[in-house]
Length: 467
Ligand SMILES: [Zn+2]
Image: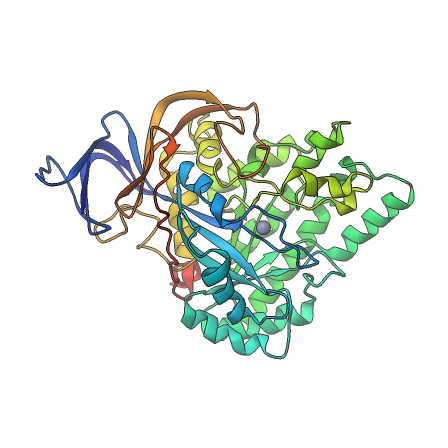
C-alpha cells in the first residue's frame, strides 16, 4: 500500500519545509519535491502542517486502583488519542493482583488490550507489588521491550506506595541494565499529615485536595529521587511535574549534569486549582488529580521550563475516571479517585495555548509531544519524527480550524472533558497510522483497530544525555 501526502508544510523538531511524503509498506519511503506515484492514495495537505504522530509518554487505560479495581476507561476508548493526533501511547502496566511484572505485561497486551488498541502502544512497567522476584525481572523486561519502570512514592500506606529501600534497590539494578526509572514524586508523610490534619477539622470538600498536596511535598520527593539517581547512576524521569518548586529542583540538577528528565501535562499548563472550589461536587470532583492543579504562576513557569528544556516532555497522564466513581468521595475528598482524562487534547492544548499564543515554536511542540517522548522510551526514530525509514505516522494539522472544546467534539472516553468550554485553534484534521488514514475531517474512522505493541530499546533519552 502506498500513500502520498502532497504539498504540506512538514514540521520536525529542528526544521520546517514544504514537501511531499511517500509512505510505502507502513514506512516513510521518500521525502521530496514533486513526487508522482501512479498507484498511491494521494492526500492534499496544501496550507496545512504535517507533524509526526504524537507519542504520549503517560497514559492510564484500564488502570487498577489501590484495591486492584479497574477505574479508568478501557482500551476500546484509545481511539480518542488517535483523534487528537497521538499515534503512539505509552501506557502504564501495574502488577495485576497476584501476578509478577512480566506476567502482568503479557496479561495487559494479550488480554486487556487485545483487539481494542487503536493507536500503537509502548509500555512502562509500574511496580505496585515489590517482591523478592522484582529485581530479577528488570533485565527480562528490558529484553521484552519495556525499558522504563515507574514507582509511586506517594499513596502511603496503600500497596502502590514504594519506600526509599525499594526505590534504591530498583535504581541500582536499573542502572546496570539501562532501564530508566520514573517516579510519581510526592512525599507521602507530608501529604498524609496535611490531609489528616485538615480532615480532623471536618474539611472534606474537593478543594481540600489541593490544599493538602502542597508544592513543597512534591519538591521534597523530586529532590530525594534525584539524589538517589545521582548516587546510583540511574537515569530518572520525574512524571507530571506541576509546580515551580519541583521544576526548579530539576532545573538545578540538570545544570549540574544529573540524568533527570522532567515531564509535565496539559492540565498543569492551562488549568488552575480554583476549578475545585466549585460548591457543586459533581463539577469540582472532575479536576481532582495528583499532584493537584496549581496556580497561574506555576503555569507560566512550566511554559518557560519547556522553552529552556528544564522540562522536556508533555504527557497527558490520561485517567478517564467515570463520574460515578468520582462520586465515591462525595462526603470525603480523600476517597475521590485521582486523575483527569486528556489523551485527546494534548496536541490541541499545546497548539492553541503554546504555538498560537507565541509561548513555544512549532519545532518545540514537535519535540515535547513526539520526538523526546519517543527517545525516552527507546522507540526513536521508528516513532516521534518524520524521516525516511520511520513509521508512516503523520498528523495533518489544519491551522484554520476554530472551535470550543466540549466532550462531544473532543471525547475522552467518559462523560466530561476537563478543558470543557476552552477555545481551540487548529486541530488534527487527518491522522495516518503506519500509512493508513485513521482520522479524516477531524473524525475517527471506525475501521478494524490496528494498534500494535512497540518494543523500546534500553537507555532511551539518557543515552543522548550521557554522550
Ligand atoms: Zn499517571
